[in-house]
Length: 359
Image (cartoon, rainbow, N blue to C red; front, top):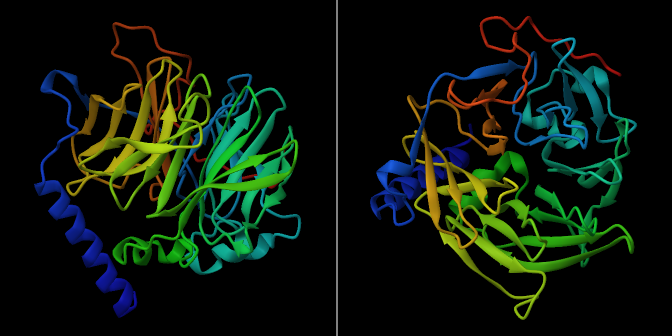
């Protein structure tokens, strides 16, 4: 680690500590704190960093982007991960497969946010180095949709979501100065070059909706498509950009948090899960209602790697992490029904996974 990166790390750590002492202004009451218990793992082999998770229209998955540039799909029947997509046709498998080295991310790709458009079956990918990508149904090499806007190339394409009614894609570029491997510098210097954008598949045009943001991150479209939430990591807040109604085109602070937000996911019930990083790493997520109020705080027993995404499906929580080598799954209490999941997908019983090069 270079001296500059080392200094930046301590600046970032200091900012987390100071912000934590401000007090949890957005914290929910004790009755709404959910302590995570035992969890199941879907481990990865040779790769790491399942930053974001997606499920297709048929409920299959999860799909996730990992450190070597691949998007993988979990196959329940064979209990293994298989390759679903790669960022480019000329990706060098010898150099990239199994890689977890940041130095080659600009060659191999690094998919961060991912989301399906259920009607078309397309998977949209925010690749930190290659920009906004789309993968056709069935997988394969992605097509690049947007690599920059207004003459400014993307440096750190990060979060993405799709309006399921219109097909419009919303995504973020966290910085025009720093690439993903230098993300700490962006936060430590309070770099305010991030942008939030819209891509319209019908016109193939990319438009900047918000600019001057400090590390814009996760994106989530509301259930009615009235607004889109954008996590602004450095400022520890979530913004709301209005798409419809009298405030259309305007934005406001949706929630000010005592922690740093990452990905944002709608749960289909008018609520949103925001993955967060706290100094002690014991708080990993907060649930916000439609007015930005914190209704639940998610804690775990002991600190470990950061959590980059919390996604709720039928009461089951799926957790992604840009650091870990597995996807974590927290089911409902035993008294409540839980969605189907491979019975052997616990950390103790799942066999080593494989990474075939093709489906």
